[in-house]
Image (cartoon, rainbow, N blue to C red; front, side):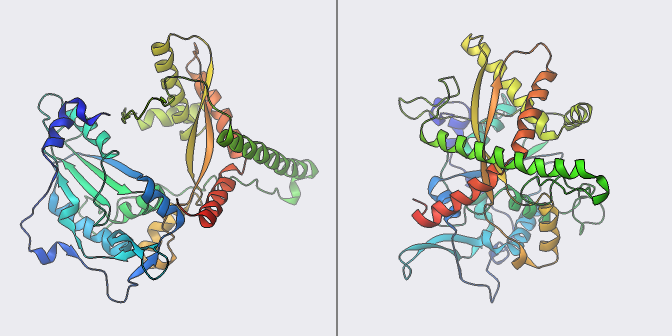
Length: 408
């Protein structure tokens, strides 16, 4: 999005975002690191790279009621108490060749709670979308911990009010961020000390960073054992092919020139747009097609990209465009595990930071008379990706590369 193009965001940019002021004593609005906690911690190469690039996590939450700023402030203070990392900033260590370290600092919570001035009378939905799109482009003040809560206290077609949370990716990935947000909330029921109800526990599809083939019992017979061995051979072959494909993409392999490819004639700002989906509809397709929620969402993305591409370009040929997709390498059970560990006050056992590998995910743009064909294709592609260690290898290679050559 171009901030200088006018509209609600242009007005908001001229009226600089202002921190809110609550009727509370200053002593109650500051958070100080607990006594005995280490003053500084080393910054991982991944966190340093995230800091230099300037990547943010932006979360949007729609509420059924107007915003209660006092309740949000209490929740933010609880978040800081559970994760002191969010009370740190990155500083250069003068005694260690200028290496970056996490340094604890006193946090004024109100400086991180922002109420923007927006002209939302004409189109509140567009005002919210424009404002949230701008959050990914605006820099953050590095003199204080880089996280913010933005409160848009006016109704839209989807919510009575909206909260946008912007967190620097250097703090951690989506898994650790979601665990912390879950632990900083309380149920709206009578028992306000309880957390929101977690989804019912089910056996996860994977219990490690990959979808490892399960060894069959001895009673399953020889054919089952042969199939299990064969699955590992397929895993090795797919991994080798994916790593070679990944390396070729980095060095010389490129996609065809399309509407989605970045222009070479300078910087052109992009913007985020969103569409709301019914989770019940997604689950209905998932159950009907015997696939996963991710399969359905990738299929929807392929269908949307196809519709946009063929309408804008007038082309009729089938093409393939690729995206670099970050993938969580933690076990599938770790979100609830993190919540339980933080709640039990065993914070030293929680691994914060970014545990992300990468895969190249192809999107096949085509016109199908049957919309379900997009789901069939997406399921085939994702099932193939699950039978590969591409995400593990890219995670390890990136980690080694940054440890050896540095974040720069």
